[in-house]
Amino acid sequence: MILLQRIKALAALYAPQFIDIRRHLHAHPELSYQEYETSAFVQRQLTDMGIPFSVMAETGVVGIIEGVNPSARVVALRADMDALPIEEANDIPYKSTRPGIMHACGHDVHTSCLLGAAKILTETRKEWTGTVKLIFQPGEEKNPGGASLMIRDGVLENPRPSAIFGLHVHPQLPVGKVSFRGGMVMASADELYITVRGKGGHAAAPHSTVDTLLVASHIVVALQQVTSRQRDPFQPSVLSITSIQGGHTTNVIPAEVKMMGTFRAMNEEWRFKAHTLIRRLVEGVTHGMGAEVDLHIDVGYPTVYNNETLDVRARALAVDYMGAGQVEETELRMGAEDFGYYSQKIPGCFYRLGVMNAAAGIVSGVHTPTFNIDERAIETGIGLMALFGSTA
Image (cartoon, rainbow, N blue to C red; front, side):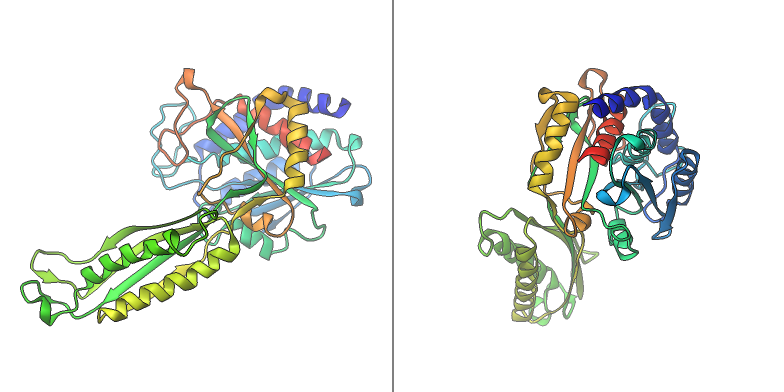
């Protein structure tokens, strides 16, 4: 409890400094895999704290903080650094200075919280046991996911963590609260690209064509069987066709129609079984109607699965730190996060940080032009992450 109280006091002391850092990052966003300035900024911060680091996946940064008996335990803390191609609509002093780019998913908050935790962990390193690995990763918002590239380059080795923690802003959770969930947390996300080809021709003579639009329509309807009739009803899953592009006038049946969509699942075994079913169904419908088809399934992020034991431990620490009334249950989400790459390899805990302040009008969701946070969340974020790094 002495360490917990010290972390809490340091979080309150340093919160203004890391609010300023968050504002700097917010004003200077960079897109996925282009986080060169952000990476350099993080490296300078770690250098100033005396934390050794290495660079991997081009813009990723990995810092190491050793406490007492460094080999006794290794815990990883992760933050993502990339922004989104969104024009910011907020009228704030630290508004994005880069047209069409915005930290609309809170990765500026995640990076600031991990830097703040790093400062606290460095100052308390003689009061906790083990090693903390700080992971600042690129490209969470875009396939193949920066986490996969960091793992490829060895981020989970030398030393290998026994657990990893990651936080994410939650714009529907009031500031001062956090939320957790054990087991299934977020879905896998795969992209579907379908091109139907046939003999185009005059719309008044459909018998002399292969109507690609009609074929595409049948594919859209037939694909719903995958989730409605071939899926275990106790396995959450979503298949949505989100784009159909073909034709340019009223009296021509096009020779080609392109379709796009997404497939989401909470179970890796069902996920890849569904890929086979999707392919078989699409090809069967298309060939049965006399057309040809190209189907590409772009395999994206895996499911985020929180280790149940780690979740229980993290919740208990959060209750000790914040009080039981401030710790809630995270809802199941069909959205995706590349933290899943880590949680498929080692025990993981992905939790939510409340940033909403309805009275102040801070209620916009992530990936919107008006997303913002109540910056009091920074104090909670840096303190709790430091506690997990030193104690969990």
